[in-house]
Length: 198
Image (cartoon, rainbow, N blue to C red; front, side, top):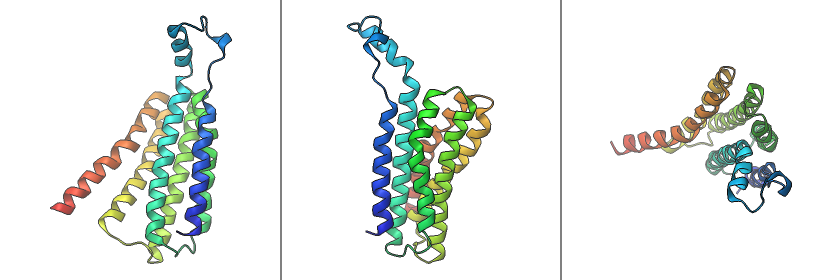
């Protein structure tokens, strides 16, 4: 296991942990009747945007970690030239708890949506840069699995760029477009599997 991967593992674990700090338990004084399930559910519903942004952020960081892990497994100890791109990637991961909380607090504000989208866009571009550098160094094997991983990593910047434009028309439409981040890799994997068989 190389040094950059070990460092990244720790940073990503901390970022995932910090994400949960945006979730708040309602104060007893905020709930009309603390013993009423309906009143508690109503108060929790008011904070649902934070829960949704937490879920999205957790999923996206997990996806980035999976791609990052795949890249560094293929690279092995040949990490020269990847250090600063890895730090750029980690910068975007460490700021994600902030952008996620901002999104959850201002879910109807296009600027908050765009800041979160730009955060993901830069994380994805840093990942793509690491893949390109590793390939130029001959450290990446160009097999079907590697190509599928690259296509999956390329989905995020495309979706985020589209959502940035959409957010000024409808923040809800912009956020719904993020579902493609989860759906597209599944479709890509299935197509790659079919091609490999056929």
